[in-house]
Structures are given as structure tokens and as C-alpha cells.
Length: 136
Image (cartoon, rainbow, N blue to C red):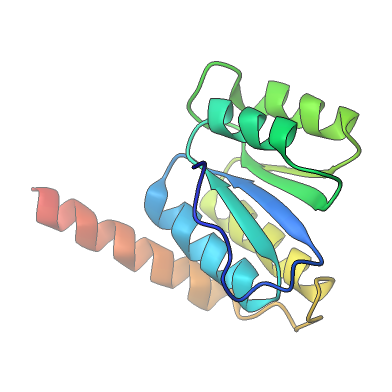
């Protein structure tokens, strides 16, 4: 299994979400699911490549971290996705990833306002800080 599949999604629009950082990936996936997307999560570029090869034409978008771990990395992954006709959103920062998710929600299956990007960023930063404090 590549990642958590959506339970609340409509099945009409699928997104491959490729991020190595689990807390960021989970928060973005939950946000996108709330907007009606089915989300395939991948923690490594290799997993995302497998997802690209296994899915049918229902996947519309790849949202990917440029620095995703794995053998192919974000750039190669984005080229493969674009060659398959997917919309590609390549980000390199937490704010960029959140802004991309908000924009996808604005045009997604449920056409929401996309949510509060600053609040989502703060929530993710808080979760990351909490995890770092627990590790120390």
C-alpha cells in the first residue's frame, strides 16, 4: 500500500501527495480530503512513481516536495507526472505547500474557499515543534 486512501473523498478527483515529512503530508492530505479530493500519499519519490504507474486517468494532480526522499526526487517525479498529463505542483517550503493545497481546494470537487492558510501553517509548525520537543 502506498499511502492512506481517502475515506471522505468523492472519487471524482484524485491527487498524489508526495512529501517525506509525515506530519506535513498528513496535515495536507487531511486538508485536501476535506475539500473532496481522494488523496494518495507517498513518503518517497519511489512510492509516488509506483502510484503514477498504477493509477488510471482519475489522478489529476501531483503535489510534490522538490526535496522528497527517494531515488528519483521531485524533479524527475514531476517530469513523469507531466508526461502522463497531470497538473504538477512542485513546492520547496511549508508555506508553498500549504498555499498550493489551499489553491487546489478552491478549484476542487467541493469548491471551498480553500481554508485559512496561515492557520494551517501554524498548526503544522506547532505539531512539528511538539514532536521535536518530545524527541529531545
